[in-house]
Length: 108
Length: 108
Image (tube, rainbow over all chains, first blue to last red; front, side, top):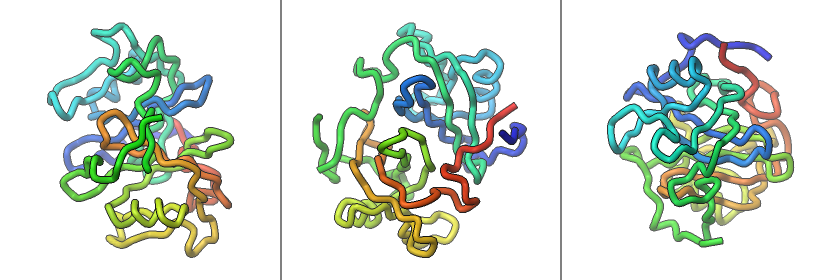
């Protein structure tokens, strides 16, 4: 598999890149968050997911409060280098509602 | 599963909502695109994926040129109602490179 350097990524005008989080074992799509450069660097270094909270405007270590951290298995990049896919081993539910993943509703 | 109406969705300031596309059978995450209201309505009505191309600034019927359309099985919504997860039966590769999915590279 071809490997990309962080410099090749295309962050948006707000300095963010969307990061889809998928369970590495079940392949369930758990959530989507946004990373800035710092949160991505922390994610790569610590092998736990960090995001940028757009609502709270602060760095967010997923699971720091709840204990439901996500152990990072691999960070994938798409063809445009503007979206990430993070494969994880979740240590608990990804969603703040207590659901395993955030996509528990559908559309009519 | 709880069902949401289109009026409940939170489109961003550009009128777009990110849509993760996942293979309904293999659970592979194939790509991520962006939908505006029109492309989402077309997706729900025709059961094939439509996106808004941010680079070309036009409605984009996935596979209209390549033949690689995506038959929609289900449209899921996340807890914040600002991200979609589209489960599909792809009729060919999702990526313009010919790869089955767009996330064929990883990070160092």
